[in-house]
Image (tube, rainbow, N blue to C red):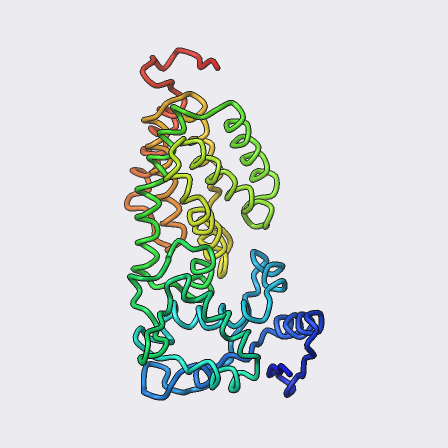
Amino acid sequence: MDTCTGPTGIITTSEKSGRKSQVVSRMLELGTTAVRERDILRPGGGAEGTRSMAARSLTTSNNSERGRALRLHGTIARDIGVRIVSGRIAPGRVLNGEIEASERLQVSRTAYREAVRILAAKGLIESRPKLGTRVSEPRFWHLLDPDVISWIFTGTPDERLLHALFELRTIVEPAAAALAAQKRTVEQLQALRRALDEMAVATLAAEEGRQADRNFHSVLLEASGNPFLASLESGVAAAVSWTTVFKQRKRPLPRDPLPDHERVYEAVASRNAAGAHEAMAELVHLALLDTTGASPVGSRVSSRVSSRAARRAKRPSGDSPRRRRTE
């Protein structure tokens, strides 16, 4: 018989999956889970040692529905994963064995085993004969996995990791925008326009607006016509979504980013590859400043760059500024 620890004591579950789902949903509603460091780590020091820490469920609207749908092993994997990417469980630490961990967590061995498989598939842990299951070094983590990105942004992400994420976007997205300006189809252009219109109506303060934002960046990668760039869609979309949520945790968005997206759209619509590259590079740069709370180095300089990007975005590639674009 499987059991899980709730804030009011031991909750017993039957073998029926329906009852287990009710228990997990109740745990998520209360904002607690059963995972504690002493339940999953072998003794031996570390930043957290064997100190018990209550886990908080994600409560942002961006993942509330998804969180409720998680099965028990997914909940366990998420809570352990959050501790790993936040540094609470340091690389090299050894997790308890399956029998001991499942007993401490009061869950079935199957649920714990599945949670370990999820974490291993994402590169967060590795199992070796006679050495046990250890937390992997960060260089082995699948950082573009949407779940891993969401776990990183559960708390305050490491500043170096945050800048590295925007470095990746700076490399990938302007190049994708330039290719999209050359290769996009009419249908893809319409999808971009639809996403912008939905962003304008809902705004990025609402989940509908953030979904439209994700769609815009996803369609742009697809429109590049490069299957390798398109394969980054889920990771880039997750990065866009979670950084937008992160920006708004303590304050409203400092500015409206819709005009930045419009400039990218205009360049892609005009088949202006250079303008699309410049407009997207500026969009990512300003998004970084919004996320970190930094001020642009010289607001007038930033304004001039945006103005130049807007002019170039409207100009068809290789044509004069006065020529009107045609499909």
